Every structure is written in structure tokens, then in C-alpha cells.
Image (tube, rainbow over all chains, first blue to last red):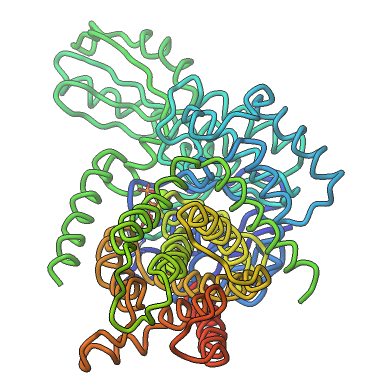
Length: 330
Length: 256
Ligand SMILES: Nc1ncnc2c1ncn2[C@@H]1O[C@H](COP(=O)(O)OP(=O)(O)OP(=O)(O)O)[C@@H](O)[C@H]1O
Ligand SMILES: [Mg+2]
């Protein structure tokens, strides 16, 4: 069953399409990712699905409720952790949770029980009565995740849950996310621009660039689209080897650049010994080195957008700065 | 109003209380200005000297205190209303906006919390002024004074919420201070009767709702007022209702 359905959703800001006609579905119980560079439109998408922004056109349903016509029902069935902190930093952790629980009308018994439960889950029990201002960034993030869970939501939205956190804290939060998904059976939709995060967590993911979805599948399938592993062979002279390699039946694609020949194939580790069996003397070339690379989501991103995510971020930032300057001048 | 909305109002009120009692330095900060005015003006003008427009059998300190209380209510209420802007800045507004509750109830809750804290501060100033020689003619009149304080509070919190909902960030904050709050304060007759203003300036005092608030406070606390208490009360009730509607309307339209 689809717990989220998005059809032709578009959001314009002064004529600029931040989200451009996107459609996708999220199945109940899965972890679904939106991967894209800065300014791709991830947050805008999340804000529309969580009823904080009104779409310019298109429609969406969350838990069967229309995001425009049944806002309160949508709001009741979702939890959300925003990209920027959204805590009252003059209250304690427990008070923040309590505020949330009361706002979502949990009765007193449930409230107390649930606060303990979620604190336990994110390991903040001993810090619960400290003012949030004195929390570290990672603790604040965990508290926000705990808060998003308070009212037993069916879907949890996480907008860049690990942005700006160190590697260890990030791992920790990944584990909470998996635990939540498995234990509490919550559907999770998260945005990120970390490749390894999407790869590690998501069952399916959409790559989003300039407000459009350019690819959507499981991380596995997305990588397979690239034609499996890449074996890079450094040879001399490259010309002779190139023509010889082109005849290899298991090589799906053979390309050559500055003395290095790339062979696309499946299960590359098993193909390296086969390469070594080729009679180099007879064919008149010499293999200098061999390396094997499994495709990463980075390669997938490159394939679909024509640039690496870092290049995309740099160019989007430049573009945003220009737009900002224009807005200021107006 | 169903129980759901009452619950929302209560939660917002509760949050305001917790923040208020935790931020003692801020409270002292906001009370400092009215207190200094009370202290310097009160002693400065009190030695048998009477201001034009005030009958000579009224002590200046008695004339001044209701004005200072009105001023305290104005500043604390405006800052309670404008706190929506701080919530926007610190991101907490998103947590409120995404909750399945009525936005009108959220505004009402904020007003309830703000009025409570403003009232506490107004009464603190009243108590302080007793030590400076302020005399209340009839203790029951304090109740009527509190009614006026509450109405001033509701009106200006609603007004503050409306302004904060329109503003995108805290950049314009000092502009609001200089061009809205100070004129309201200075035109309201806090320190002297507005009849002392020249003819061209007086209409501005007449459209300043705080003028009626302070006049009403004077009427109830010291039995001296320029307008009838019924007029003061009517103007304030209309003003505060209008501001609640305005605040709720603009707040409902904010996007975060
Ligand atoms: N309120 C707004 N007014 C005008 N433009 C906006 C607004 N919100 C977002 N944008 C623009 O829409 C585009 C998409 O922004 P969005 O925040 O959705 O990107 P994102 O994918 O979440 O990026 P990031 O990874 O940096 O969080 C950007 O170009 C941004 O400048
Ligand atoms: Mg974002």
C-alpha cells in the first residue's frame, strides 16, 4: 500500500520553480530517501507534504489524507524533524517533549509513559532535565527525533537528520532510524545530500536536481544501471590492449582514457584473474596495474546529472547567490 | 470552544509561564525602564509643584503611577506579542505550526500567557509605587484597574502578534520600537495631560488606544480622568477585540 502519493507537485517562488512537477509514491513501512544537492528542492517538497507550504499546483496524499483539504488529519498522522533546529531552547528536554505531547492531546498516563520511552530510545534519559540551550548539536538532534515520535506517527519526515554532525554521531542516528523503522514500524522519508547515508538507510530513493526527480529506484538497481563494477587497467601500449579487450565477452563496455582502460562488468573481483590469464606477450602489451571499483551513488549521481554532487552544490550555490542579489536589488 | 482548543490555549500559556519564571534577568530588564521613570519623574515633580491641566489637589506621583503602569503594560504586552518573531527566528514556530491544532487557539494561548506575565509586572510596579507614596483611595478600585490592565494587555499582544506575523525576521525590530511603540507611549498622556499638547498633535493622542487605557487606569485608581470610564472601557474593549481578530488573521497566514 502507498502511504504517500505525490502527483505533479510544483512549488514556485516568484516565478522560480523550486519543485518542478514531481511525482512519486512511498510504500508503507519503507525508508524512502530524497537525495540531492543544496537548493534541489528537498525541503520545499517536505514542507508541502507536511502542510507547511501550499503547493502552486499538483496534489499529494499522506496516509490517505489530502495535504490541502485535510491538513489537520495529515498533521495528526505525521512526525517531523526539520532541517533547522526547532526546539524551545529555554525549556528542558523533558519540557519540550511534554509541550509536544500536550499539543497532540496525549492523556496524562500515555504522556508520561511515552516520554520515558522515547528518551530511552535516543539515550537522553540522564540529560532530560537540562535546559536545551546546554545540549550539544547531536543531543538536540536526538531530542528532536524523540519528539517527532511522541505521538505515535505513522510517517516520520526527517529533513537532513545528520547535517553538520560528526561521523560517530551520524552512525548513531542511523542506527536509531533503522531501529525505529523496524521496531515501531514507522514509514520514514528522509532527505540528505550524503551519498553514504542514502545508501545505508534507504530501501528506495529518488535523486532530485533542480526541483526534478531524475531517477528513482533502490540503491542497488540505480548502481546496476551503470553496468556493474569498473575494472581499471593501466597498460602499455594502450592501443594494442584496447583492441584486445574489446573482444572480451564479459566486458559490457570498454573505454580508454590516458593509458587507462575501463572495463564495465559484473562481479569484477572474479574477472581480474581472467584478465591475468590473457597472454600479454603474444598480444604485445604489458599490464602495469589493475584496480577494481564498485559503483557508488556518487557515480549514479554523476550519470544522471552530468556532475558530481559537490559540483552541483557549488553551481547551485552560485545560482542562489545570484537570485538573492537580484531579490535585494528589487 | 471545544476542549481541544482549551488544551491548546493552556499549553501555550504553560510554556509562557515556564519561560517567564526562568528568565528573571529579562523581567528585571523590562521593569527597569518604567521603574526609573517612576523614580526620577516621581521625585522630580513632586515637591508641591503642579502641572498645568492637573487639579492642584492631586499629587503628581498619584497622577504619574497609572501612566507608568499603562506604559509597563504596553511594553511587556508588545514584547509578548512580538515573541512570535523570536519563535520564527529560533525555528520553534515550525513545531507549533505543524501541530494539528487551531491557529486561533494558538494566538489566544499566547495572549493568555502574555497577559498573565504583563499583569504580574504591572502589579509589581503598582506595589513598588506604594513605597514611593502612591495612595489608592479605594482598595476595590484595584479590581477595576486590573480590568483595564488586562484589556490593554490583550489589545497590544494581539497587535504585536499581527506585526510579528507580517515581519520575516528580527531585522525591522528596532524600527518598530522607534516608530510604533514609542509614539504610542509618548502620545498617551503618561506624564502629563494630553490637553497640554498643541491642537495639531492632540488628534494623534485621541487615536492612540493607550490614551484611553491610561485614562481608565487613572479613573479607577485615583478617581481622576479626562473621559468617562464608560468611554474608556468601550474604546478598549473594541480595540482589544479588533486586535485579537487582526493578530489571529495575520498569524493564520504566516508561512514558516
Ligand atoms: N521561501 C522561499 N522564497 C524564495 N525562494 C525559496 C524559498 N524557499 C526556498 N527557496 C528556493 O527554492 C530552492 C529549493 O530550496 P530547498 O530549501 O527546498 O532546497 P533543499 O534541497 O532543501 O536544499 P538544502 O540541501 O540546502 O537544504 C532554492 O533555490 C531556494 O533558494
Ligand atoms: Mg533543505
